[in-house]
Length: 416
Image (cartoon, rainbow, N blue to C red; front, side, top):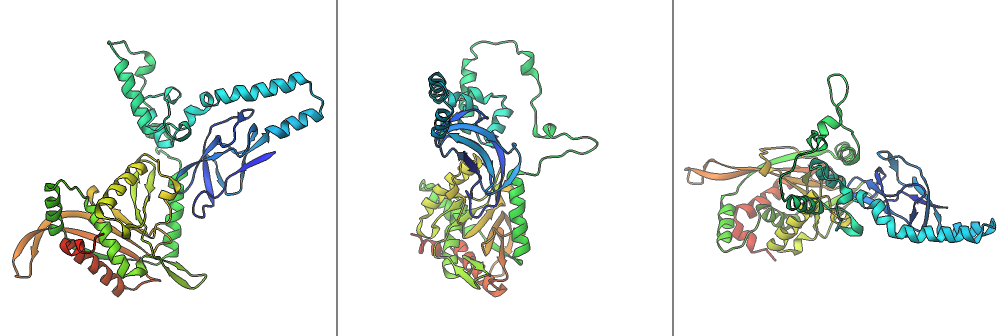
């Protein structure tokens, strides 16, 4: 009997939540066929079958949280089943029937499981549009249904509506919203504290109770950078402001490497990372996700802009691969477009620092000539680990970053 266990599919993960099974007891499965979908701290992942055979038992119920090493499914390997059958002197007819069942199953596996091969966010979109996923053709890896597949199905259905029709009673039912789905008794409502929300909570708690957080605030004059970006647009070169932030940070982190580091208290060392892998705190329907833009110190502004755009889109669609969500050495949080004027973010443990960018707004400023002028000003927050660095160092670091942003021509001198 082969045991399928929850293994470590993240950076030191300890547990995961069972979301959806793609098979049921008695099903015949192929090697590498997806068996179950699991929610970890960083992603939704699939556990696949290591062998070809028959599902004997499903041991864990959906929505349960289990630790790494827990057996989820047991499978009777095909060869082992045939061997036991011969020892028990089963008839040749029974062997033929077993083999026939295996062959028949290969043709029907996609029909039996395709409707479940979709991420939670994709299912949410389908529910909101009253789409039955059983009728949607998946174009993702191993037939997985993507958000684009759902919207494509919706558009196709609209095209097929050649003439007006009288809605059926089933179509007049009010859609089930998340609020009503979790409606509780008495005078309050509840939502489940599990999955990504629970994993985020654990990581934030670990960070806050492990790292002595200190927040340093600064204001940055964005006027020159905004004008420079406008000049680039006139040349048909579109670069996001966040890309400038990342590039400037990569330069400043190269000078102040203590903020691109990780503390190992057990070994008594501060590990200064060579590469700069930028974590991009991203707000999604599934909660906070941090895709990672790798080796930013080696990339041009245009490359950073394009790759950041791709990663953010994949995060919103819950399509990030494991390597795109792990290994960050410093994290940014660009909350300005949402209207934030200030915050004290929690560090993305086990990193040393996190910088947040807040809303840019025009305001009167006294210049060096004691004149009152209108400038575009932005607040930033630099949260850092006080075990690793002190206030003087963080002020020097943010001043270096500020100088690059306020004088974009200086920034271009160091671009690759």
